[in-house]
Amino acid sequence: MTLLYLAPEAMVRPLTGGRERARRVLRWLAARRPLHLAACADEAEARALEALAREAGLAGLTVLPYPAGWRGYGGLRGRVARLAREMAFTAVHCVGHELWAAAQRVPLGAGGRRVLELHDVPEHWRRGMDERSDAWQRQAVLKTLAAADDIIAVSDAERDLLRAWGCTARVQVAGNGVDLDYWGAVEAAEDAGPVMLFPAAFNWPPNEAAARALVEAVLPLVREQVPDATVRLAGRRPGPGVRALADRPRVELLADVEDMRPLFARARLIVVPTRAEGGTRLKILQAMAAGRAVVSTPEGASGLGLMAGRDLVVAPLVEAFAGEAARLLMDTEAREALVNAGQAAARRFGWETVLGALDDVYPAAA
Image (tube, one colour):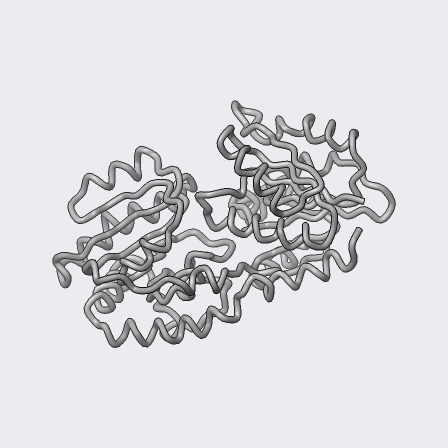
């Protein structure tokens, strides 16, 4: 019998952290049981998904349109329900909260399981569970969580948060990982100068806010000590706000980059200036595996269990973050120490290792 894998976006290039994880989990599951993928995609992404489906040996593929209008992903519930009536699924694995309402409409036989995988605990759920929120808001979040037989979290901290809320579903932790061979092949290019690279999916509002803080607040302070310091923003779907940042001195923008490794190779530092909590950042693991030194905010580094000051540098925005970035741009020996420790730490996060936790969710082929 077949597992239905629901994803709110196509896990094809250019790969964001969420797309990379979804692709890895998809392959891991498809290697162990028949799997039908239903994912949102545009025309170009649909062709790439078809190639992925053939390569991964999927049992089937359904391409869903990206939502438009006020109904959002909820408007896809009918399409998913029709698909489920045409096929027999023994379980549904929903990536993220966007299609969770649709996942709840999928009929399952006896022993079927509904699995919700959270890249992070959504901000609107956090607000809903705030002690200042109305009781009905808290109950709505708990009802949503209770519809899952299993929830997959990416860190112990997020698992503990869900349990503290009173979540009754079983919560398993399957953390984020890194392709050690792919990123380990990065070799430092000829020094391109004091470049700080921020790789991110800029269509996510917290990443846009982080880019703005980096350019408007951090960079001027860094340039007081390192006058030729440069910020390089690289990632998916930058909006007008991010594009406008590239008009500033010593700021570069590269949009929708297919392969980020050459950019990592030409950066002295990978910076993660986010103030947003939730999930864990694949970009940090990728940077460490690629032999790059990392400066992150506490929020950006949370959940990975890394040692601040050894594996990476952790500092809050703005002054402390800028000070550490400037120091590391100038101090080759300090960067090399971080690189050596970071590469050693990254070896704990190979995908096959971290995704082994899914055996507790899917103990045997369906």
